[in-house]
Length: 443
Image (cartoon, rainbow, N blue to C red; front, side, top):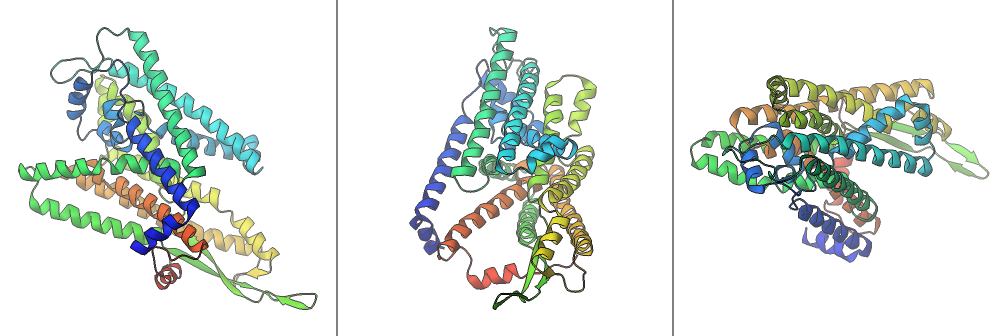
């Protein structure tokens, strides 16, 4: 491991990318402590302390505590993720956006521009809702969260401007990490927000244990469950279903080509951590708004949008399955794959080239995606239900663990590719890599 770390810093490009990514994450953490003007920080802290275990506490986890302190990064990257979802859905509906998605780099830039506009629009809507709701918030001791001398509309305008600018800056940071850093920028920002909360959640759990509110048996069960979830996520995220492909021999001039055996690797979870993140971001909007509206029936709905509750679990499961199939359909086109195989003389043994091959690949993808959806739903929902019943902090929930492990694996794989492309040993020995890459799952 030490030799691998030394190899990382021998590669100038990789070293610069890692340093740039770390600096961006440091800026993200600094911004998460810059408060929005007009807020009484002490009263806000008391209010959120009383909201422990609520939906506000859950979504505060994704911002690394920025929402709980109402800092300039209080909205996090959720508006950007929501805008990305909307644009991707509209790409299927509107022919113009579909054409743009097929125009290569130029079309991608236009879609990215529309996503940025959508992010700003959603940020304005959400920040205005927060500004209106927070004006009616009162700490348990009766002190108002908003400074009383602040003009109502001046506070709302300033809050909208501050939170929208913060989300826009985070969106820019994520894009810069994609281009000049290592890993997926937006996912890394969410990763950093979750990880930074884990030490505090661990300390909180220890305090609950010492005070007798948690039993030792519960703590042991939670540790065992977390280890089981980690192993399950690592196994499933590195699992492939390999479809054998045979290439026919072709004679070109005096040389013979082809005649080789290969395979088409399909991940059991092609969507990665995208479905849980998308589901959380969609549920974040109504859940956050209901948390600030002091109306009984609205509060009742908001209380059911807490991880582990029935309504949240049902909606989350539906969205996870939907985005599993939707994101996989965007990434893989069985007809295109079958045409490419036929063009280069490839075929699946026992399957006729062309339409039959496309149908076979689609059937395998459907089974894999269904299995991936079950796996993601179980990881996200079941631990959250258990932890809610036991009073364990949300930082240890299934969604948090899935995102942390998934983003970490993706980043490690990118570093691994940098090392292998320059003939350095990676984090895993070759024998282990070969063993992992040749694993087959039958679904």
